[in-house]
Image (cartoon, rainbow, N blue to C red; front, side, top):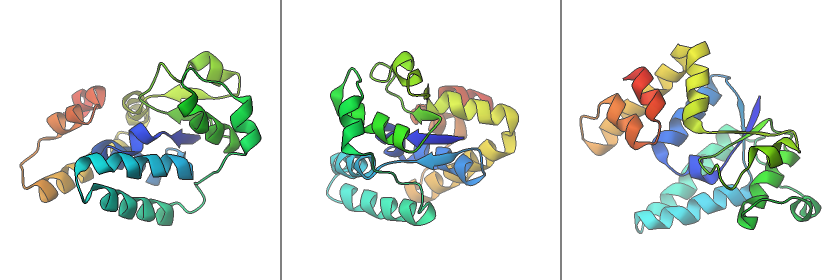
Length: 179
């Protein structure tokens, strides 16, 4: 299964790391576009002076880890597709260009399932997708979540517990399942 990951899923560190950990274990093949990665880097400016630089280094690591996962949609496709928010058409076009099965996003209203289905795509949210993977392969998700928990503890100096960390990361169903 090939899934295009939207900026809103890549930008938050905990969510991104858990999603990508299950990709590393073979649950799906991730896809993104240069524009999605650029949106992530620009959004990280909100974190402070080092935010963008850190995002760009994480993006470089992402590209190195998955060298064949970046797709640039053709201009003609961008003009053919429609979404309620024209600023999201590039995401839709990248998914179509990559022959993805789904778009992983938190943005339900701007990615109507019916519109996506016309191009053979589904829309999945990270929490629901991770729950589906957990039901079939609990170890894949648990290992990723525990790895992220250890990193969060090390980097923040706080004694995070898994459930609050996942809830804060907008993964409430997964938090309940693993917590």
